[in-house]
Length: 620
Image (cartoon, rainbow, N blue to C red; front, side):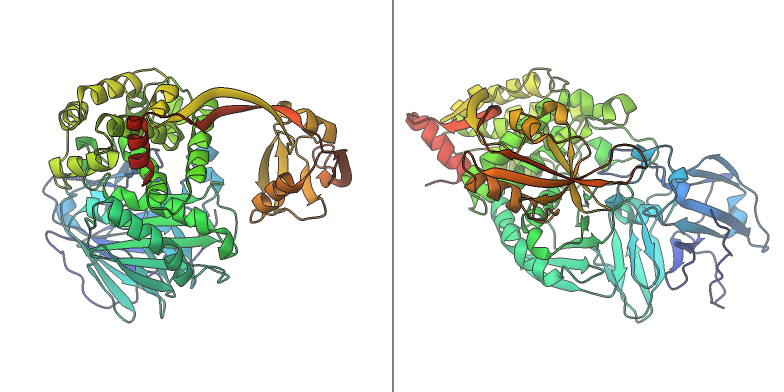
């Protein structure tokens, strides 16, 4: 890492100790090597040694990131103007003696998005970008506040006052209602550290749109470096979703203001992933910058998921979340609720109110079944996985919350609707749990199933004990039969195929890449693809991340047996070798394929099944 000079604030004001508040100062107009300096006038500390800390983890991430590793050149200056020596027992913690003598602390914050890999123990240790920090001089700043501002142990309930000097014309996008915007300096006020960490801020030249939804003022803000996406476009495409969510939540929203903060990236992320991180009053999105027309459904799905987090965890959360420990966290048992129900709601709401058709919804469900069964341990109890999710042995199971977690809630929803003649489902349960707990009341992990049983039935409790706390596979055949649907774990038939291999994308060439040829079907083998082949032309057409579905599935829809498929691939025969273009071709022919998790309609359902299905899917 290159050495950098210490930044000096151009300020002649005499700073005095702030007493009971944290007083922070950060200057975004002075950036060097993707670093900015932060200055803190601390609150009064009564202990003989002050423990100044940066989080190792923040709510919603379920991974240890150790944000202290992005802090450097920390200096503690005494009231006599001299440096106070400190000790550093770990990369997140500073032990400062005689804190009553402290005048201020300064340190440098490094951009986690572009941090050198040596900052990480391994690639899995890289901070997921929606939880990280971005410092781009005169372009954009993503202030996930836990990456910029530390706290003193036992003093998280103090007020935080943050003065941010900003480039000319820049705007602070946030879910906060306590930002005083100035021409060159903003003042951010929050009442404790938990609220601060829950409040990401993005600074850039403004591209914002406001919409009114269910009594809440919703901000959509966008940074798109090449202007491919605008806030107006995003707002048009998620407004319909927001209105459906309002209806799904009973007509109003439990917040007065909410912010969707979108950063569209024109280069690959360090983590290799894109996505979002939820907060109670906002959500931060890092997505690839592409022509907006290809983003519509992605925007709807991801925004719908994150927005539903205003219920879980804002109104429904355990003590582990309500009293979150940023450095020695204890995990709750109930990720099936926080993430699984949220993911299920995001898709169920869309089919319930006609934003997607039933076939698309079933396709999503079948995809989640395949994902849960092939990529994760399908019999590991979800409560166990949730409790141990930070442990390396089990952390790789976390993403199953979006697959099996959603399926758990689908099954519970159907079970509840069937037993109530369509009158009660997880939508109602979510509202009742919100009333029972609320944003200011945390439940005990061990009490949740008991409370759900009281609100619903013993049968629902038995389901949770067996399939969430237990190790049994979800009973799809039995559950789907309750809504007049047939389920087959495996179905074989002859149909046209693309080859049965896996496909990804090389971000450096923007070309589709063939992988997992070991599972290729007869047609894939006939075409003679090889792992690592990059598709240059598919029947004369380029394949990009934006159009691959249109090209590939368009071919399948229109192809006939005997048609010739011609694919040009770029192939390397060894490491460091130059790629060579090779033309592959074969006549299209049906192959025997095994279709997992096939869902079809029962043509002779009972009246009770029809009632439950109509209620579940919003049919009349």
